[in-house]
Image 1: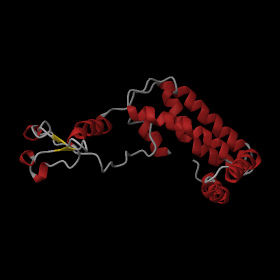
Image 2: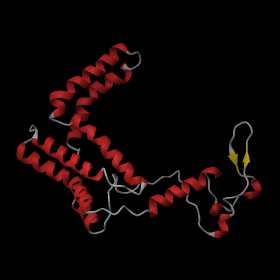
Image 3: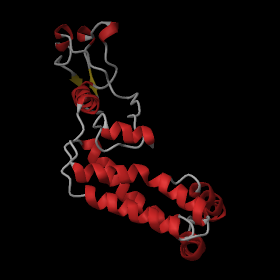
Image 4: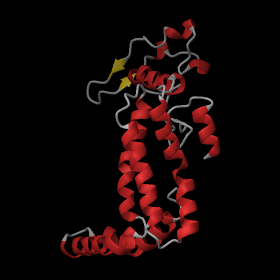
Length: 216
């Protein structure tokens, strides 16, 4: 958390994604920028009449070092997406947005401190963490983010707010009985659902305990 705060305040990293490093897309194509290889992108292609598959003619195959193994029609689109991820700068955050992001980064530390002071069965860590996350999301929701990955991160944070229904002590007192009742109802009355619902009912308490200790 301290390193993330440093990235935010010193290096102006903007809204930080999770995971912070963009995963390697092994299916993406790395297109060479040399002018000598530019002509291979615009080579005429053969389209199968029945399959609709796009193939390069053998006479226009580039050298092995510059060869792209993906479909010709997808190379430009994939390369543009890769360029956007690697070279796009984060949106400049104002004072309000910087405070909101700092609150979001420091939320796990506050939650752990409250757990140590109040205990695992207390409602205070759950409530304080929820208030901090809602406050951070509310302050950032009006920001006009310029990058696609920042907007995706905000959608991910909005979805993760639903996970508070699965966190103790709310889960132990309210959610557990209703979720198990719904899964049992689906397993008994909907054909085929029992193959998934019954193992899920057995594993849900274990998953919830593991997730409770890793939710920061």
